[in-house]
Image 1 (cartoon, rainbow, N blue to C red):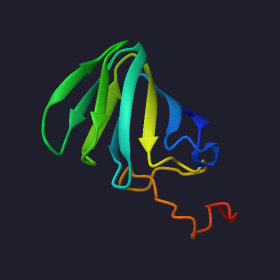
Image 2 (image 1 turned 135 degrees about the horizontal axis):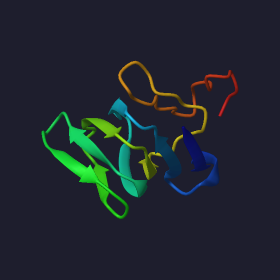
Image 3 (image 1 turned 180 degrees about the vertical axis):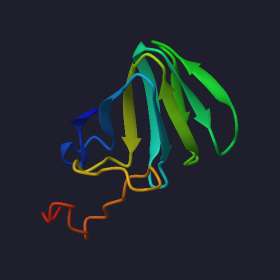
Length: 117
């Protein structure tokens, strides 16, 4: 589950999201079009970098940044809440594709619901 607090239309240059990782969930993601900074605010889990290698424990106050579009797995045995910042900003209705990535809307493409930007 993800809540989106700021989006491209807010003009901040980034978007801010709160994401809850369910107990036992392991999410494979690969943000090919975005850089991401994440801080754990509740619970605990792990990030595994599939591109450069390594695994790191996450707990409240621990932050990581993916600046090279690394493929990764975010997981939690007991549940975890993280705050995520994406650059460039997400528009709003994006959903992960089959590779765990968000599309990059360039202002020319329609949104998935058919609205223009």
